[in-house]
Length: 330
Image 1: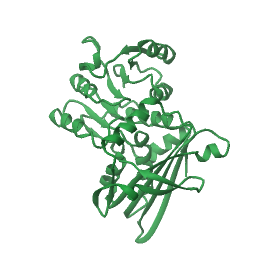
Image 2 (image 1 turned 60 degrees about the horizontal axis):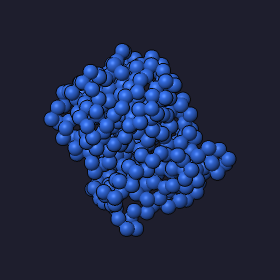
Image 3 (image 1 turned 120 degrees about the vertical axis):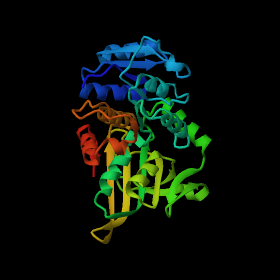
C-alpha cells in the first residue's frame, strides 16, 4: 500500500535512529519525514536513511511547528506528546497516529481527544514496555491457559544500556508525578507504596534480584485481555545475563503466569532477551505495529479507532517477528 511520508517526531534520538533503521529494512521505499529540534542532526540522518527528509519540529506549537504545505501519511511520536499537537495534526489530516511516550496516569488526555473525533484517525497508544514486546510475549504464553489467575512481568535494563536522555527524563517525570505504582490485586486496582513496591525477579540466568513496581500499560492491557485478577510489572537495572557471559548489554523480559491448563493448576514462564538493548527492541516493536496499522505488510490498513499493541498483532506472529529480528525467546 502506498502512503504519504511518515513523520517520525523525535526520529534523530536513540530510539528514533533504531526505529528508522528497522523500518527502512522492512520498507525500503516508503517516504519518511524525520522530525527533530536540531535540523542539522536530523538532516544528516535523513541523508543516510534514504527516501527521507528532515523537518524541524516544535512540540509546543500547533501542527508541531510544521507549515500548512506539509502533509503526512502518519504521525509517530517517539517523544512525549505532552501538548497533544502530534495527535491533533494526525486527526486534522485523517492519518494514523502512534505514541510510545505517554504515562499511564496521563492517557486521559489522549482518550478525551479521541472521543471527540473518533472517526478521524486510527490512534495507537503503544506506551507499553518496549512498545508492546512485553504484553505480546505475555499474551502468547497466556494462550495456553483456560484461566489465568496471576501474571508477573519483570524487565531488566542493563546498567550499561544507552537508553538515551529523553527516555531517562521521561521515566523520572512519571515517577515524580505518581510515585506509587499501579497494579492489580484480587481483581482490584491498587497503588503500591513502601515495601509493597519491591518484588523479587528471577532473571534469565536464574539470579534473584529485587525489582521495583512500575506503572505500565502492560498491566491494564493484560487485565482486559486475560481477566487475570493479579497483575504487576516490576523493573530492575542490573548487569544483563548476556553481558555476564561476555556478550552485549541486553534487555530482558520475564513473564510468569499461574492459572489452569486443561482443568489443572499450572505455571508457565516465558523470557525474551534482545542483545541490542532497549532502544533497538522498542524500534522493532514500533515498526511491526506501524506496519499493521498502515497495512504495509500486505494486510488491510486499520480503520479509525483506538488501538493498543495486542489489538494490532497476533501474539505468535509478533513474537516470531521479534525472533527474526534477533530476539531470543524461551
